[in-house]
Length: 337
Image 1 (cartoon, rainbow, N blue to C red):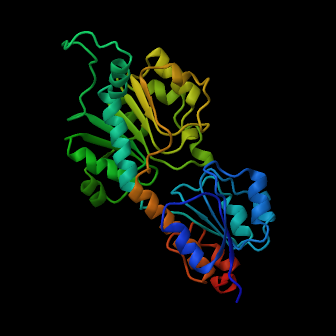
Image 2: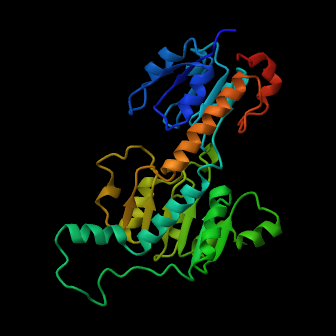
């Protein structure tokens, strides 16, 4: 049996590429910049699988260019860049990498929350600009307490729950909102209290959002919801940029509807250099690095590789997005290895 052919859209941390290369012939996009749409289509024509990232749009046009395609394995926990319905219709398995980045993402979300609360990035800029002229002042660069305050978590999935666990060490009251409430014993385990969304927005000192990007969650945080927040509230987003109406957020920060924000994701990435957020002091801007630890990225690459190889071996992958695809094209029919 001939070895299956796979296109990998970016250089990956070890051991991702090694796992795929053991059983597949690999064409690798060597550049750190994502491949163009035209390049993806050109390279996927004769491929059995593709190992891609969230920057690679996998829609019906791309899929139709690859009649042999059996699996799309994404190195990500989100899969809004993939037209899952189109893939399922064509009998293409879609896999992703949840779980392995939970703790790193929660760590980074907490880092952003602490940093915006204590104005860390402002202080760093202040020192580097040579503006630190008084050794100490009781009113200099005052921030907000975190310990004992109220944290509002929107979306109590893996990362939201990990945030709730971290809040225990800071003796925080944790409110959460989710369209799917966990059992009461889970609420007790996480130390959280359910609140309707409006109540959460009005009561929370810190608001951290952890929901997937879907049609229903596009601009979920809009002008109306921002106006519900306390004027002292601090907002953190490490989920997906388009969940937040970025223009409305910039207006809220500029006009003082809320006190500050810390963002790792944006509606357009990289952010436009003319974006009004860049002119504001009361916002921290990171570059989509919440899962960027050596350990997490290595585990993500490994899991994505194992997902892809499993499908090509005719085995059920560890994390399958579209389980209904097995009725359309059973694993026995996609087995290539």
